[in-house]
Amino acid sequence: MPESSPRVSVRELVLVPAIITLAVTALRLVGELQRWDERFFGRTGGGGGAIVGISWLPFLFGGYFAWKLVQAGQGPASRGRAVGMTVLAIVIMVGTMVLAAAVLKVPPLGQIVIACLVSLLAGWVATLGWPALGKVLLVYALAARVPVAALMLPAILGKWGTHYDALPPNFPPMGPVATWGLIGLFPQMTLWIGMTLLSGFIVGSLTAAIVGGKGRQAVASAA
Picture 1 (cartoon, helix red, strand yellow):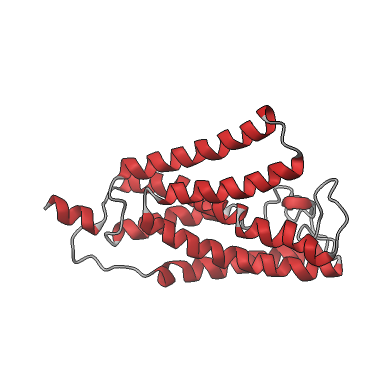
Picture 2 (spheres, one colour):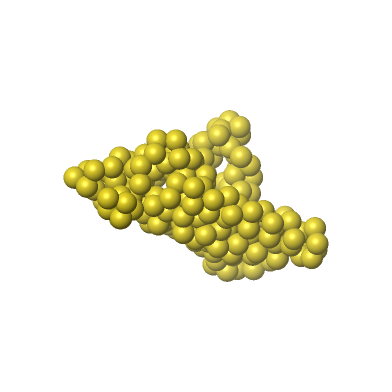
């Protein structure tokens, strides 16, 4: 990619996807409060894989972010490394969870905590393969997940009957703020941040591998 290629800012890349994501969150909330079709607006804990939701969006926007970065000369220094670090991140994530559940027999609540932490670790590992994409995905992840974390507090306090306030099975009794901290704030700022990074890199690293293009520093070094 030529040195004259215009750089794109993180704000420019993230603004519209963040607005779309917020709109989907609002639609999801309205659909659940109005008791619309469960297939699209699931109200069980975790969302039940409902079609209307924001967990699918990082796959879409990861490819979009990657394409825009490559076009602006901000692609990965090594496409192979970008893909390789993403694969390593997936192995770390899956391997740790299998080890915790099948080998160490960690209780369900402990598995949730481990999943939250290892997800964040896996997202960071993927970022090492393409820091520019990692920065964009992190900002997008925060823009997507901070509103959800904030929304979950009034949902839990008001017992709205949505997936935003649904409790995991066998969840111990505790106050609403403590409940929000454990099932809202902590997972949204760890598990879902990491999963957004990882999901975005799965598509983003493959996009870079297909369309080609390297970062400016790598191009300059090769010249």
